[in-house]
Image (cartoon, rainbow over all chains, first blue to last red; front, side):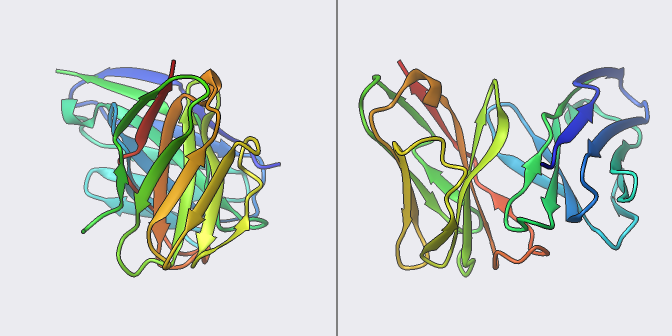
Amino acid sequence: KQEVTQIPAALSVPEGENLVLNCSFTDSAIYNLQWFRQDPGKGLTSLLLIQSSQREQTSGRLNASLDKSSGRSTLYIAASQPGDSATYLCAVRPADSSYKLIFGSGTRLLVRP
Amino acid sequence: GAGVSQSPSNKVTEKGKDVELRCDPISGHTALYWYRQSLGQGLEFLIYFQGNSAPDKSGLPSDRFSAERTGGSVSTLTIQRTQQEDSAVYLCASSLTSGAYNEQFFGPGTRLTVL
């Protein structure tokens, strides 16, 4: 059974720092991996989608990498800002049930001014 | 509309009552998904539709939960005889098709509180 783990569960950094969020999954048979952002009381906003054949994706200050064989992904946030404060979720699309997303429990990020 | 919409945004109900949650997918999206986000369980898959049919209902927690989709568009998730453990945020998503490479777009969710 596919399991997704995110470390750390919470992170507090001063504004301007570069930071890395980690996501690991137990079964490397995936179609893709997606990073989401969730603000308190809100839905999910997709940040980056990495297909299984890709190694990384970039959008602005965000860079996500994928190492499928080792079951790991990282989300790198450059020059963090208070507006980046949110919960970040990663989710995988498993090969054996490709219609669903399996989510990690998230990393709650606070960027202090 | 431009995105997935859900209604109501908040629902407070008494234990034992039935509730209906509604999801309007992005126009033209044939696949629709329901997920539940609760404190103890995180975000978990409930059911998905391709068109009006639901090939996988295995994520529904009990037979008190049901869902339907009509006209290949709007979907309703119904919870009968609600229990306190049903309290959660129910999220809906849609995608162009249910194919693995299609991105899922999420709505804002319905927060359900069962007293």
